[in-house]
Image 1: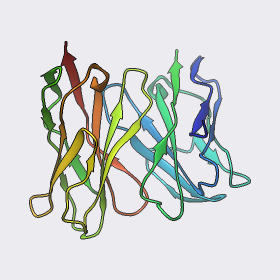
Image 2 (image 1 turned 90 degrees about the horizontal axis):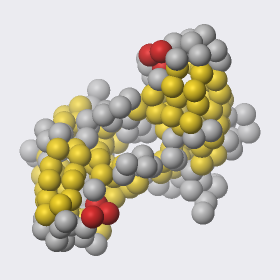
Image 3 (image 1 turned 135 degrees about the horizontal axis):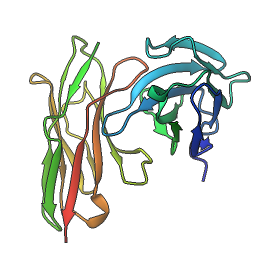
Length: 114
Length: 112
């Protein structure tokens, strides 16, 4: 299976700790997206990469959040000084250049901040 | 910003019957894409069907079909011959550049 993968699948942390999530997109997909989904709601856009360049960041992405895609392949999303309000599912998606509008999602990382 | 509205929080359907999920959106763009995604209890978001706004023909994928009304900005999903495996949260989504804007979702339950 060459779908989008995300690790870890679940993360429990204490308030104030830093956490990092990883996303591996579908092979040869140049575009990579991060979304956040709270319980019972639709996903909300966080940020977007084309290759290694981060082209857009949502207002939802406070300065405690940082995302990277250093070699244009996998991406990491780091949350510093976590707060209880950061508890959510963090979804990663990818798309190809030739069909950029169609995004394929990974299984997500469920974060619980205690 | 584009707004996507799903007015039905929950829908229930008898196995083998048909259910229709509604979705409306607000945009000033003329060229865009619309999607329905399915998110089962395992929470992996799965693409169900895709519609290009410039195509008048409604998209169909096996038992799933859409009714796309561009002037009314309406994009409904019909699930025919419902199966137990169709039980999930369904999200309508809009894309005109790079990011998806999602509705709040409709939970579909299938009665055996």
